[in-house]
Image 1 (cartoon, one colour):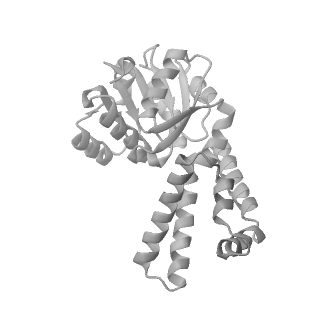
Image 2: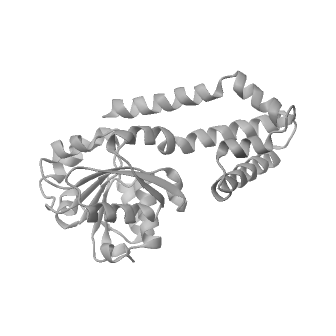
Image 3: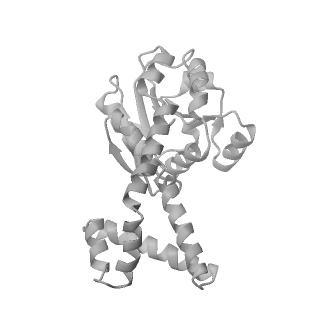
Length: 270
């Protein structure tokens, strides 16, 4: 365990998919169950995590009193109410980390009306298996040591990058929502494979292994995506025929429009 996390109490307000994924990763790699406290409006979720990980269930006010780091992992529309409750008891040195899409550091600081350091983060769902990537942005009151603690916490879920806060909505559109684009593309590949005569089982296996192998190749070959694409595309061959359809359908612009819609929605949630 990192010395900067030793004996730290980590509170989670909201234990949905992302909150529970981060808890799972922390327990696997860096901290013990008696360091984690959780709160959520769903008694079922609380009971499930309590029995699964032996973490302590507390009220929001008690988390404010006792925790050194507090993750805000609630839906954006619930954040103001949570902060209103939290500000009554939060300790002055406590680091606040929000993963609520669209909600700015200024929004959190204004609601808290305290001088707590606030960090905004955008993880993604592969964090569930330790293969995620998180972007974190520090507020003006965050010290280097506090940013280091946040980086260590998120590094248990995968890779971490530090960005300026005004880039977080673009991160949301790329890596935050990105897994869903990827899964949608795989769904379409499998359906097409079945349409072209393969069984669902074979089409699924071929799609998954093709994509996972290609991703590994992209990560490990030190070549960029454009080079790898060119390497597999023989002039006037089968791949070129398929890519021509993508190009004629303006796939690049479709992806830009989709990601712009995601970014705009994140800004609306603010």
